[in-house]
Length: 619
Image (cartoon, rainbow, N blue to C red; front, top):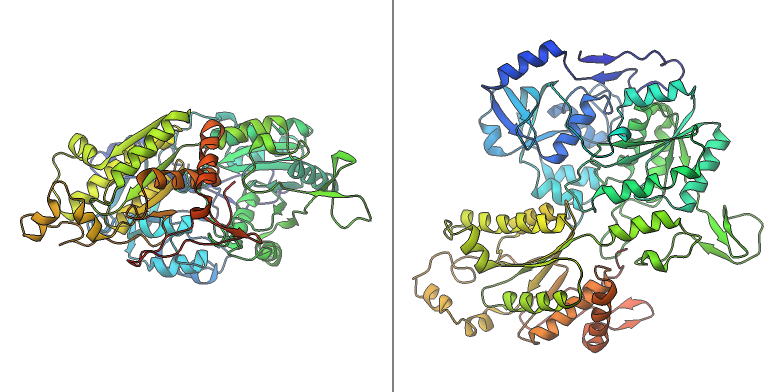
């Protein structure tokens, strides 16, 4: 029955935030009533991130929240990290819908919330509908409005334009077929801790994997605090860039045998993170309190996406820790700073806290960015973890070529496709714009709406290829920035998106026009033709920009291969080929002096060439 969970052990474990766990799951009798009523209701199919939020609300993990936020709570949370009643809550939890859907809603209207397969998850009775200022929300939450930040990109280009609030009655929780025994609700985790007589519990939410330093530090912490350890991994669908969670969960599970079986508990949260720095740290501290934790470990650079090109922390290296410490008493949890550990060459299996009186040479943790698992010293991690790490490095990605008709997108994609097929073990698929339009979009015309639909269809196919570990090459014109952003967000749910702007000048494109399309467009015979009667919105910050009027397709392909190798996308034979390409084109690709990268110069038509080697390579 919905309401609150009654916990027999509340007096021993740290009580939930707000005093009690919210329970939004209705009684079996009410389930029957709601399922019957839902047959005549308007339905809203929830996105993966919305499903994750629904599950966290329903099980009490988001206590004291009892539904998606209303406008008043939303605005005070964004502005002051407070609910209207004054309680600390740093991150808005809202239900977004399209503006068209929102305009069809009325107060007290019930809608059916369903998953992608149409299963009824909940019935939602509307009380408020409003259109938020998303730019202001991005600035408040993330400190930037740049879509280079993945959460900002999701907010501005993927989430719906309107928010809806109301009463939430949950019929059933989303079904998970993977790691079922490790997906426990706050009530179940508390019951397990209570059975083992735990009173003090240290919570730790790994950013990604756990290596020797993480294991050693957490073991020391629970020993010093005389506490149990709860490791919780967030595996909720992000709608953001991250490999699938399967290898990650296997890698985290591989370190559990380093602990006493009674001292460690491993759980998976269906939490879709926001990457909001200190706000995220406070949020996670509250969530861990709801799971029974009395202490919470905070790492430096917590949940920080960095500034992209510079790699500098966006939120301040220790701001998250300072924020949790400042609010710890109010939340009711103790912050534990994560301390860096070092390894000594003459004692490679032992780790020490910096600052002790030792004079031997030390090796810092972690290793240099971009290292493959095979290159990492044995002292950094465990073989089982590195084996799973290597699997995550082989995730799929999409190369998305965009530019004017005649810019050379298809030719360049074909050359790169052939190069990758020669040496790359992963499946490589070429989705040519003209071929895709004929095969899956033949009924579409060339209005803006139809062109957007065509590009989004192509993006969806590419996302499936990426999801299953393949490499997709797409070569549409894709003239509109918002549509490209939607494709990026779609693909980054499963892997990486590399935007390649083929910045060939319009005059050159017209001279290459074998089909006579430009001439017909200028004669008024073709309407809405990109570059003539319809605009092409130039990419602001693509990963790569290439002008094919300045180099051959083979040379341009070499440069792209060089970029992919530098970013760690390629390994083995493909990586060796790319490294050879780097050597062949070293003079024109980049020049390094004192560790600084010399960026490419701008071509004569003013289009900016992005650096083919990033300032900070991806790991």
